[in-house]
Length: 189
Image (cartoon, rainbow, N blue to C red; front, side, top):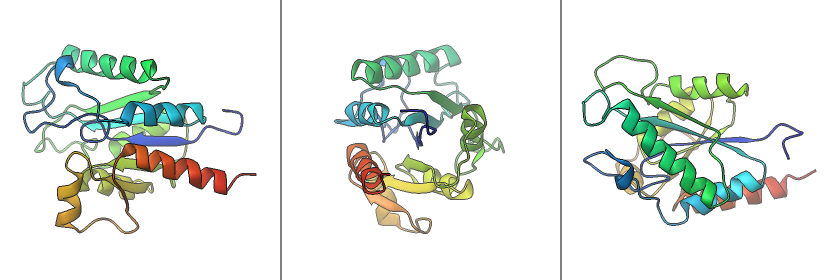
């Protein structure tokens, strides 16, 4: 399945894979998957897609949790995805706060560029699934395909409008995956 070069999809974490919280996800116990998200990632994995996660984690800069706790949260996420039959190939996070001026905090595209470099793939047209305008703006800045889910902050993002051109909107990650796999089947060899 990887012979012709596995396809890549990049997911935001909070609000796309797991429940979001205005108080941040500060422990592995607070990481709770959204209904259908683990199975959706497993479907992508089985279809030969690589799944990467790009997530802003300013809770690190704010002192709400440390790097070891973030790794424990990500380990819980990886294990949950694997238990459902899927795989997350790569997770990159931005540890900076909004005022730090880094190039990796979305809406800047630095995290997406790091993923592309680490996986040695071009970003052009890669689906980037997020629930906030900053996810979509990072996708557009990197030449990716912006996809908004209505979970997490997605409904509010949609109501506020001003989405990047050609942003696609779906109810949740499972619906995105259904669409990507149907699209792929329609363009089969």
